[in-house]
Image 1: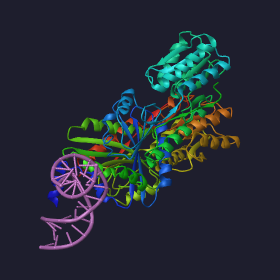
Image 2 (image 1 turned 45 degrees about the vertical axis):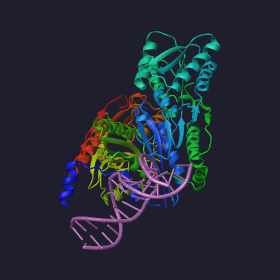
Image 3 (image 1 turned 135 degrees about the horizontal axis):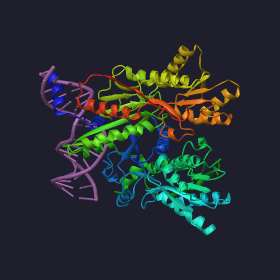
Image 4 (image 1 turned 90 degrees about the horizontal axis):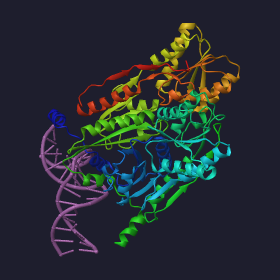
Length: 302
Length: 302
DNA sequence: GTGAAAGCGCTAACAG
DNA sequence: CTGTTAGCGCTTTCAC
């Protein structure tokens, strides 16, 4: 007995959980393994809401002969294909995939995963996708600022653009151009943090460039922008009106509260989870794209 | 063939991933399954940092004969015991457990999990624990406010206290009492959101109670408190100084920036992950408690 | 105590 | 194309 323990230690034995599980499994009950697959680099705000909703629906369907496990699994951005068990279906009965890079999208486009998949926030052929409408978001943001009478507009973006942030700023710029004939200034933050947003905008304002309206394509950048604006002695919204994107859970507690145009997270979460369960129940259901229109929350900042 | 497909659909067949995995498993490679177990109700900020650090160490140890999978699994607060595979080790080779409620702590104290476990933020007999020092945090917070000359102190807590938040506020109250002979006022927020913090403090200030210094035991409550204070026409820190807890990633971008006394997250994350791997490699290693001293960041709010 | 055997659900391989 | 079989690693059971 003691010999065994010692061998275990010396040989670095690792119990095989798959075998244990197979053994421990009660043949009467079906286990559904659900995963939410996201990249390490992405924030977990929306993901955690998706998880909570998945669990809510799973709990409602749990019974003596049916159990669900839900987990968040992360991949290195651009290396989704390295995730074990993806192709041979040995990990999940259903997944929601989000926060992919173009490399991951290419990988997915080239394969068919033999289980239920819903993609969140990316448009991919052969997959059911739930999408926000970044073009419309950018357009509405521009309209809010223009209607206030702002004319010296600035769009604040991170240096690294995703499908969504790129389309948002494009649409914003196009709308401003078509309505005023002038090009909004483009300010680029080095990273995704408030600090990089503050730094970029501080440089812009410090250079004496005029600005009376700002569109930040992510809310974390807006938070940094607030600081830069206040430090420059300008008032929000009197001197500079600000519009953000509405995926920040605390936008109501910015000072002043941040006006947002953004995807309606509740709707997105509900759609993506509903479709996942639908695809699990009806394997034959056909691929579809679901667009979730933006919600607009006018608050103190514009 | 078509008959099979139809039967699959009609009988609601669910592939057994454990069996598939066992089958697909290459006998040469050992799979280590790591989990970070947290409650649904808790925020994922620290958890996601822990996950990234776990993955970093896992990547460094990955080789041709050793693979790691890391996932976040959530349990309903107070019902950790319902998590499948916990007791029979059929899910994980190692876990980090955090954000437990007292019921979960009692469950854990009553069992021994047959694999590597590190508990984060709770003190449990028979488990390796990484702990902040809430008593010291509460004491230092009190000292900062007292040194400023504040005498009408308030401590803002959520209604549902964890080990940490309870100890923080106890220590704060004890320190204030021993140094001034007076009891600080205790304001209780219904939930954990900024809105509930704002509402609770608004009621307190509205009732004409005096307050020149506030300690919020979580930073999300501090965010709500800011709004209530400003709405009451008071200035931070001139009229009311505020101290928060320093686990908020954007404390620097509060207006004014929030003075924080809190656990040093980098140190905590590194400790907890190091100990997890250490316990996986050396099964015989003995239980230990690791205390991470608080860091203090004096900013504009106090 | 030790040892042997069955079987969890699946897939790959092979035979008909 | 259909049917059968072996075996992945583990635990439980039963025999010694």
